[in-house]
Length: 425
Image (cartoon, rainbow, N blue to C red):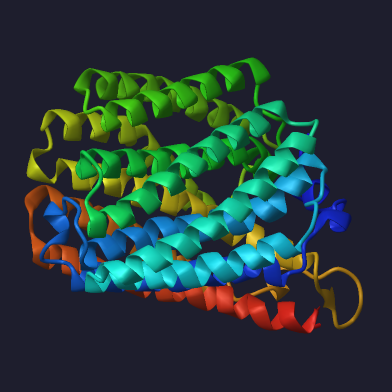
């Protein structure tokens, strides 16, 4: 049986300084707000976005490199050492990675927004170095770990995807100036698959095997089914990446079919974990997590629709929204509002002595506003893409921005207790 308190409460020796994971969480919250602002600015082009530098590409990378990657890096460097019982070899590399990755992402995204190739190259180089440092820490921790083999397998798959992702990303940024890639569009499609489904997707699926049982107070998922799920997910990523690079629709179709099997296996394991859990009332965060699972189930279908033109001209954009915004962003935001107070509680004490109450750590009211606004914004943006209505995309962006500001307010409300090391009585 895995419990939240057992998962984190016995692992203080493996906790990083609070400033390390929380710098990534704060950066993700800021990018979350900027993301919706960028969608509003690019609303006229966003429903039919097909790539190319400009505000729409900046919005996509505020989501992928900003919200998703920052959240994943912050969570992984703290939760993976706890899950594997192996602390990071050293803290300074992840600090250095943050100094490269976060400013590098800012410069890269600014270069995309202003169509400045020099900024894009410089930002991509700094971001690549930061991600490679993170990848080295990830690989070292996975190499030394002896527990949770399925989670480690997902971690290795994410590591391989990350290495290929940053190589393609750097090549794409250089190609904007030097034009050496044979098929820029094919490389961009493979880059998206490696980033969204390979790196981020495999991390999300792998950590779900720890986090969902932890939240529900249930046993770990069935190992045999978990290995089947991993094998099919890894195969889908490989087929999709090769199919995109070589522009082979049959391989991409096979990736969608195999991916649908992987999704079915994963959701079955998650359903079993919730059904067997001691905790039945899982709160607002699981409204987001369950919505994310619906989007995960739709992801292979959206990919098939985009591939075969069944969703019209907006099919590729709709697939990106379902996979990156609907599934991954929603899932990570739901998880983040659960792990932030738990991580913070490990670093603070109550003014009257003893461990803090989770209600002492942050103001939870903004999370309700965020959940409502987020779900409305994703649904409205999907409709705007399907119907090609820029005004609806702009309205979705305004609603999404309101929710993002509320979520940032929640993260901000945790920081005073965290920085002081104490909570109110």
